[in-house]
Length: 315
Image (cartoon, rainbow, N blue to C red):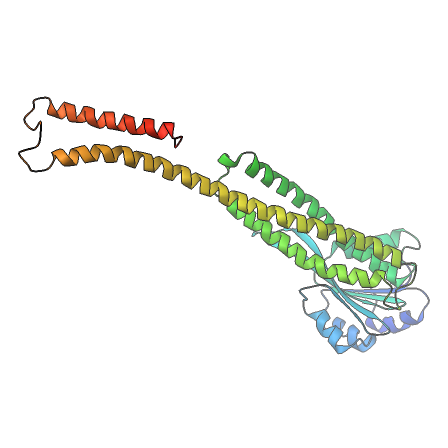
């Protein structure tokens, strides 16, 4: 893509286009094995960089190979139906006058940058600014996801701290899902901060002075996301502790009720057990109203027991 034009080109034309003035952007989306040979046969990238490019990386990174920089970055997609956070990986080679991106499937950050380069004259005035635009759009996916996560965390706090007695047991699944999601975002954002730090400091000759402030702006966004992720992790941990406390309190209430019933019935069982003994010397054994008297004694002891519990504020 010399300048701001975007079109499909033959592999044999890339050498000629590299010699022309302007910026060349080669985007490899789901490349075939023959198309992937561009990395080694045309651009002659380092074998280690190519190996990392064709395989999926678990974290963002940037390596300096002298005449070019190899970078891995990630964007996030909405959570899938099975509760997994969607992740998009983009591998990028940045030279002075070219950019090569490699990814599987469509990436909105790539498509949006391509449209902008075609619609706005001068948007692709340098290779480093193309990379900045792609990174900026990828970081925006984290910002939008964090905004949605913020609403979910606020709703969870409201349910736990204001209506704790109505919280269903299924909320534990939601807490663990949020906790897992926050940890996934943190694992993606933390190494991306290091990548943007190195770009904004001007460690690489392929990054010009004009692009450095733009990379610092993207770094500020990533820093804000990382800070929010840390706070969300604390909130979710606190929510888990609150839920466990609510469950423990519920258990204590149930045990208290069962204990009270057990004590009340124990006094009645004591009297029934005594008069159920096979002895003829038991007082009142032949008393005509003995049965009703024993029932009255049981009821009296039960009431006295409840009064004692009430005065001690156990119930």
